[in-house]
Length: 476
View 1: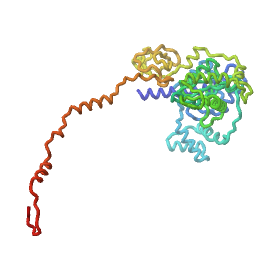
View 2: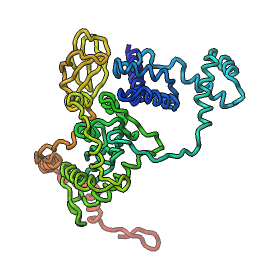
View 3: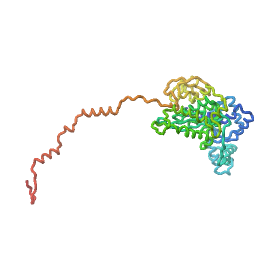
View 4: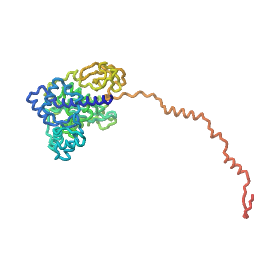
């Protein structure tokens, strides 16, 4: 039963990943403001490009499939893009594909029919010739046609909030702890739309920078980030999907396209961080930052009074003025923003209508027994959890046994203060008691009788000494 549940959970996760992959492909083309002609041109571009599927394979999606996904998304939203868990796995095993491609690469003269005969002789079964030809085209011919040294041109978004770029910067040490800056840069204006220093490079600190940016600057069309652990977290994928944001990850090993935010970080180092110090004994004349709150306040002041008002060397305009020229921007509804920043985890309900989450036990509706449900919650409050089935609300999870009040990843920014010392030195107490015990013991060594060797020495001194003459006779 446990293995069966694990397999079902894995299929469900794969289905969700496929849904996110489909959503990222069609989001731009599904924009209702596009004309049919512009949408057709964009769909053809997507169909002509190669994409990495959730399994990491390079695939091409036909135009008919893209149109079908767009129609499904318009009718049922994101959930309509998630396939049935029983259909989320490919029917053709990956091992068979890899073996067939290896046989073709080993001898390019082999036809699909010949590779099929070899597979049948080796494992007793083989896919059809047309299927093999399709995989050969995807894995061999296209790879040979790719240029060895791609050339990247300059790119700039056409209007504000079309593309935000996010990244993290290592900051100064405050009270002996390292700080990290999460920042989001508008590609068109170079304005810093969101930022926050924190003591960790994790999802919680990323949310603390992104959520105020969305609430005050509006929702961008796309967000471009790298593959750091905070940027590939399932929470960020869910938040972007809920708000209709296309999340784009840079290709590993190819940092092209991130030059604007890297240049902004260089400006931060040269103009802001160089004037700060987190060490109390620093004698270089730099400002000594007392805590994280002061660091964030100082950075906000620098961004708003210096960076946003300086004329950018590339655009010829001040970042804030160029961003404001594209407004006004629609802000997300507070309820929609709050929903996007909730966390979600999937659990199986037991036969007694209970569900567990990070050591806590909750009671749910008895009708949900033995079913797979989604638990939606605020990571800092595990006492209030909403239960959903396939996205449909199904009541609240009533706490039955609570041992943890916050998600393990939701670590507080400032650790709790240590308890006051008691002043008790346990090791010294043990040493004092031991010394007092030694003082009351009897010294048996001092009370012992003189040794036999000492008595024999005294007797030897009392007896006369004997000697021998030249003839060997004893004498006194």
